[in-house]
Amino acid sequence: MQSQITRKSILNHVDRLVIKVGSNVLTAEKSLNVAAIRRIAMQVHQLTQQGIQVIIVSSGAMAAGMRKLDLKSRPTEIPLRQAIAAVGQAGLIQEYEKAFDFFNDRVAQILLTRMDLSNRKRYLNARNTIRALLSWNVIPIVNENDTVAVEEIKFGDNDHLSAMIALLLNADLLINLTDISGLFDKDPRTEKEAQFIPIVESYTRELDAYASGIPGALGTGGMLTKIKAAQKVTTAGIPMIIAKESENVLTRIMAGEDIGTFFVPRNTKMKNRKCWIAFSKKTKGTVYLDDGASTAILTNGKSLLPIGISAVNGKFSVGDAISLDTLTGQSIAIGLTNYSSDDIQKIMRKKTSEIEKILGERPYDEVVHRDNMVIL
Image 1 (cartoon, rainbow, N blue to C red):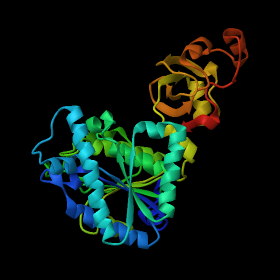
Image 2 (tube, rainbow, N blue to C red; image 1 turned 135 degrees about the horizontal axis):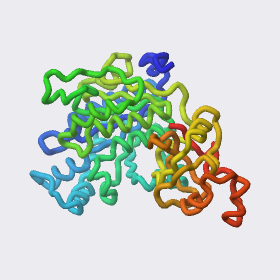
Image 3 (cartoon, rainbow, N blue to C red; image 1 turned 60 degrees about the horizontal axis):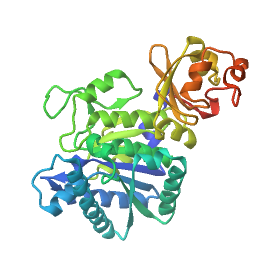
């Protein structure tokens, strides 16, 4: 089933493309790699001339800030690194603006935090803003707001952010540009026998093992964060390619060349609201399901009733996103809960008809309704 989806079938129908540009691509000898930005701008211009809408998710604020401040090395203190990023954001967008201005293209800077995408109203506002820019033929340059988002500087979340933007905008393809040709079973920079993996049809634990051995040299992420990003978008029906930034790499990929590692998506795209439930809202806890409930959800398309819950972990409130796990700890779905963790503790393993007697009211029959649930 998955093998029916090929690069060719995907690339023939790309109308909206998200390109993530990594720190390693944009950093040259501890300064900003202006040549790379110019190469990317030229190719994006060519793609937009073909009618493709392009959104860029860009790292590089730290490198730009260090260049402006004439710093030789990154400080270790988080406030100082955030201050450097604040200085660098202006320089970064300025270089993008100059590069695209050569082609008479306009760009806009968008800075987001994880909270912007986890809050439904702000999520929709961000989507509407970017859609408006695209309708005006303006190229959005998106970055994590490093000056307030400590997690980004510590964990290199721009891979995650690029996946979120692809999901937010229902993109047709995500291309992640890095300094490595794609996914290998070992780090090709240090291991001569490393084997290249041209296509990934499904996520496996083995991929995590491969990716864990390929760290990021200059960025705060590495191959593992890219694999996690690929898992998110392909689950939602969006393909992803990891490729090395080089001369005309984007136009060559879009022309159908087998460059980089291609991650095959599910056959159907996930609806936007379900993408938000599954990937934009941070899960606050876990409920563990018995075998009957797991089967009912996975096979029969049912909602989660209290009788199928065996255990609860974490503290959460009504409306929070929670993980639905099997008794062995495998996460099978994410959903918005109708009951708090305290109330679920009281009604789990009970019939729906008993809820009112136990809690004094029965606002919902289901702990998680099927409409508010996403199968992983």
